[in-house]
Image (cartoon, rainbow, N blue to C red; front, side, top):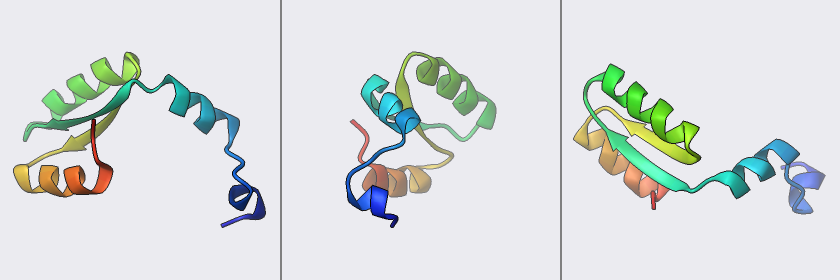
Length: 68
């Protein structure tokens, strides 16, 4: 961890993204094309998307990323 990170400094783009995010959504589908459509649609509207391709991936992602 750098000294600026320890001091609580956040890169401007990351700070802007954090403020603009409406929430985290876990999108689960075994078809990549379907996940991609949801990912693009929801991320364009300000949501952070956590994609998962199976139930097992979804459980791990849910525990790791804590969607809203």
